[in-house]
Length: 406
Image (tube, rainbow, N blue to C red; front, top):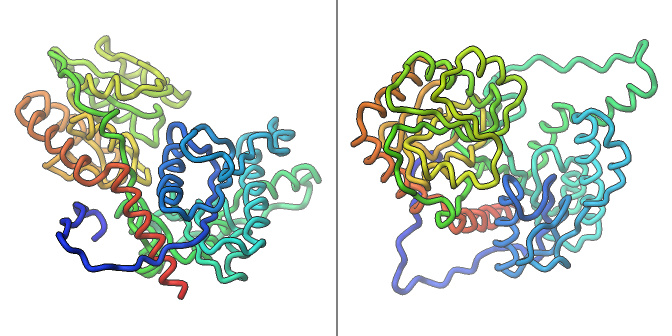
């Protein structure tokens, strides 16, 4: 079930032969690169599964930064014509890029060479419409939650004003990704990949049937992310962009209240403008702002605990990485399913500064609990959330989509 421990099934000595219903030629698209950090890693591991399975037809992405999968399988849009309007504000430019990706992919689908389509929410409306017309099974991956969150009712979108708006503004507004685009994609897809039980819930409350939701948590490289030498002083690490959505303001306030002895807080991530007032208001001399790094494992492996009280994630990659480094975590259900309350860490409600402070103080006072939960955290990812686990589950998703389309 969603959110439960997902250990692989025991190996049978003489398993009965089972013919898997996998595609012959997969078309995959993503508004990212193949190979690199973040979603680029997810894309690479996804393609690894289909390439090793012998059914990768083509992947369309905005660059290719890996060498394991031959470049002939990847259509790179690195030098795309949308670059000509890169001077526009990000929402307009990104909207144009996503729609261009969708247009290219829809033309690929229209050739009829593919028997499964896999893309991402916001990237594929036109392509899904073509897939429906050609009876090609489709999968849409949801990076966070339903576009409307967990709300059962929403206010309708206001129509774009046309009165005194210039022709240029009307053109720019057409580049934006509207809510109705996402919702229509959800309806058209045969299968939706969700990252956590919280994410799945946001679809359930909107009336989506359970059989349309497939649980696909992320993975982590447990050789790259592994426990290091524990520091002599208590060291809490916050890893991620320093933005309010990830709860940095609550971490800083809780830390400021406690004034823990022989302790320090490391902030590993890009400092956004919205975080600077909180850094000023709640500053202590035992805070270290590391900033953005390309080797987060070097900092997580030197921590005592990881604190990440995010308000909204699909399934935060850093929670996998911190667990792989053997760190107990203070986090939220909204951050994903890696941490179970009281086993690999402490779950708090988003925005609950008192609970964050209490959890920090608890770990500070009880190093034996830090050790016990840290060991459980490492075991949790090794047994459930490696990239091998991810690829196995992904093949199950492909098989499910192919069966549903019969």
